[in-house]
Length: 84
Image (tube, rainbow, N blue to C red):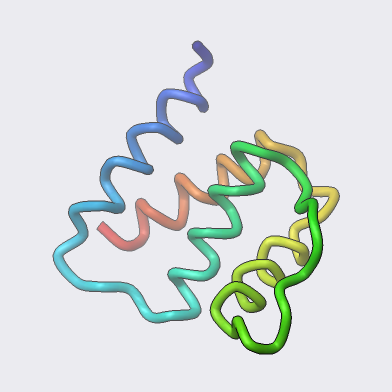
C-alpha cells in the first residue's frame, strides 16, 4: 500500500471524529474528493430536481472530472488536515 493511500485512509477515519461539523460546502468538497479518490470520474445519471442533495453531491463530484485518483486523495488529505 502506498504512503498516500494510507494517509488517505487515515484521513477518512479522522474526518469522522472532527470536533466541529464542517460547513455544507466543505462537506460537499470532502464527499467529492473522497468519491474521486476512490472511484474516479462520476458516472450514472444526474439525480432529478426532486433530489437536491443528490444533485449537489453529483455536481460537486462532476466538477472533479479528469482529476487523477492520486491528486484527489492528496487534496482530501490536505483538506482533512486543515480541519483537524
